[in-house]
Image (cartoon, rainbow over all chains, first blue to last red; front, top):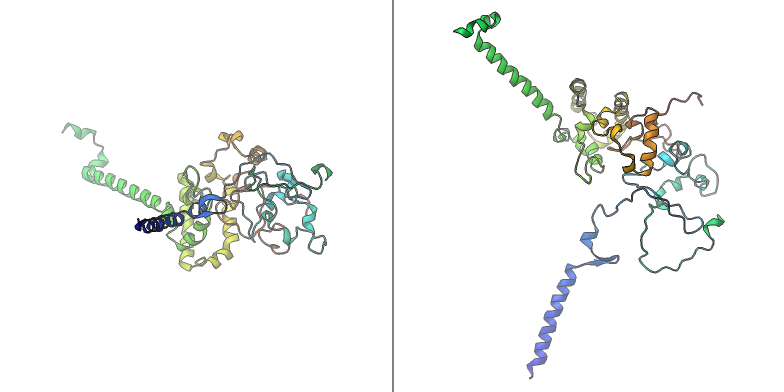
Length: 148
Length: 207
């Protein structure tokens, strides 16, 4: 009867060894049950097709992008967004014109062109996606959209 | 020899064997010519120059013409060499200028290439505008576009643009390669850079 604790000890050592091996194989990241290898594909961002505009959730929310942005790049040579949304082009393309606030520099002085701090459109404007919230969210806007 | 009277006199003069040899030689030369033409019309030939491989080919690898859902591709010659025989010959002769600049090393570093990018891009834009984007239309035929399958913006803009007589390159610049510096009237940085047109009519009033 004396060797039963020894057996139990050996069994737990073996089991923990097995479980630690299992944990090593399956590296799970914070988003969910996805292995890190599976998550690091180049094409993990799939652009959404054109769709109806989702209404804004709160005042001053940067409008979402209701169209695919696949292959649209913003470099120091060329800003693909501004090819349609600039005030010179918006009328012809039917795109939403860049808002007046984008012409103000950080001293709130009006510029003739969009301010360099607004150059990278997707810092604020993101393609819309009907994503389920990852965590429960009780956020309520202070004012309704109609108040704008 | 009852066949003798069917043989024309000029064949008899130079001999039947000579005529047959000339015929075979014609096949060999014409085949060889076409073979050389085809061999220089492959993606692998284009990127055998590091000028192409390290600049434009890398940029092209991020675009839909290189990789896409169905694997139907447009490689270098599909856009840059005409399919029809006459225009193809003209383009191939023009390409001898490219061989000269390969030897001179005009664009043999990415820095040199980028310095020339505006000029090179404008050459291609001009060529495509002049031939009504013929190489695009080898695959993309206006008449068979199903607007219900297109995105909202494409379905709205395509009929308008075709009515105005625009051609593909008017709007679709920089779809396969990085654009040169473009003056978009944003800030001071791009002032004096190349301007791109979207196929607009030239403005009547000058500023």
